[in-house]
Amino acid sequence: MNKYGNSRLGPDACLSLLILYCQKLPFTIQLAVRLDLFLKASRLVKRRTKARELCEGGSVLLNHVQARPAKEVKPGDKITLLFSSRQVEIEVTAMPETAAGKGKRSEATLFRIIAEQRIAKEDD
Image 1: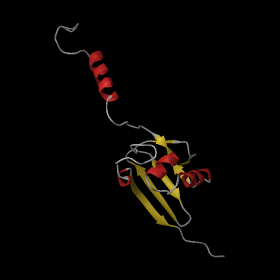
Image 2: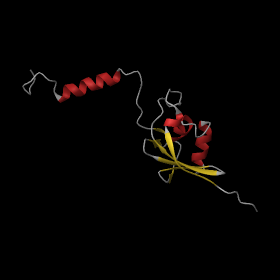
Image 3: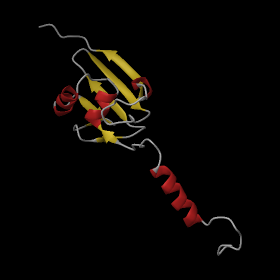
Image 4: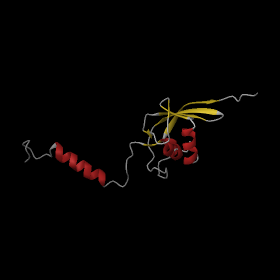
C-alpha cells in the first residue's frame, strides 16, 4: 500500500521508473542540434565547413532571421538557404540520431521542402 491507499505506484515512483527506463535505451533523443551540423546531416550542404561559411556569409536564415552556425535548430523551425542560383525554404521535421548524421534515419525524413525558386543571374 502507498500513501494513496492502493497498491499502484505514485506519481514520483512512475517518474523515477520512466527516467531509469529512458537511461537504458540504446539511443539518445536529441531535442536540438547546431545549425551547421543539421545542414550537413540532412545533406542540404555537403560539408560542415561549407555550412559554416554559408551561415557566416548571411546566406542562411533561421525563422526568417540571419543565423550563426552554432544556433540550435529544433523540429518546427524554418530554414532558408540562399544559394547563388536558387533559394530553398525547408521546415525541420526531425533531428538526426547522431550529430554527425551517420545514424539510420534517412536524411529525407529530417525536413520537408516548403518552397524552392530559381534566382535569375544578372548580366551586366
